[in-house]
Length: 471
Picture (spheres, helix red, strand yellow):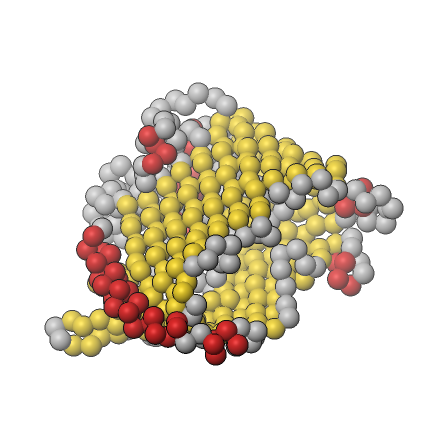
């Protein structure tokens, strides 16, 4: 861990000294604060395929009205045997690449292209997707296409269109894909408001939705096992996947199909409190159906607190929120359950969440706990989904405190004790801390991922310090 951080730390300390004079020259920078154009430049280091590369990152931004665009161009290089070498995969594929690979490679130089916000009747977001939800979130809840960074950047897309934009509030549609160049993972929700003509402000907002999500290649990011190249590189315990020569399922995956019908009915709407009743009925793998359902309540109090409570009825081999934040890291594991190769016992479960939003979204906290009502049949190391699953995030936005802002997220499966809460096993942990001194920005970024594909070293820790200047 120390060796991974030493070079970024040294580079950052050097650059801090170089940038402090820039920060002192703030009159011209502050005068340009109202400009729709901005530029960020960051310096640091990152480990890619076992090699430490120096990184110069350019992030120009443009925003006017509801339209915003940002680029993320990395120049990553290293000195090996006194020779200057760039990270070739940033610009081309040495062994050759397909059209879709090159399309994604160059599209991903854009961090995002965005129009509107998620609450507007028209919202378009292309590029890095920090969190996608469809309907109640029982099928797609919090999915992000950013988990494979820094090695792999994906250029995805999300579209929300509400018919109220064209004075037809009866219909709307949400669509997303993790990668526009391949469309290997994509989903859509078509919803109707059949009572939109009613005068009641609650009844006319009743929504009935139909969702479908597909993954055409669950093995797309799996690699051959380091233990035996004939097997996929994702599994548990012995490190050998059930997908390989002689496997009854072969070495390719059928298209994952998940369909659902949902209903959302507001019960209370006002400045002091809001409350909605919602439910979902979902089918996974229609050729060998795995079914589940959910009913819940949720809302806000004084525009400050958010809350929800759900009862979940999960059939055998059914996986609620199949496409969540960790999906790209667990595609093969999910598929093992989906295909029936790894049985999962059904049952009735729960989910509760609580959060708060303060200071005009400057301070945001969210946490949820879910799990089954039934007692677990084995240890958490072998049956993590039979134990509580904790998700938390905490954000302090820029401007709330002088100099500092940060983001932190934590997801933990198999919580069987208080001590398990601080173990990285079966966890996703990440954080971003920024120190800002006028135009100078210093960032500490940490990302911890648990990957059962590598039993000898299952924890992937990525830590770096970046120093930059915005102008």
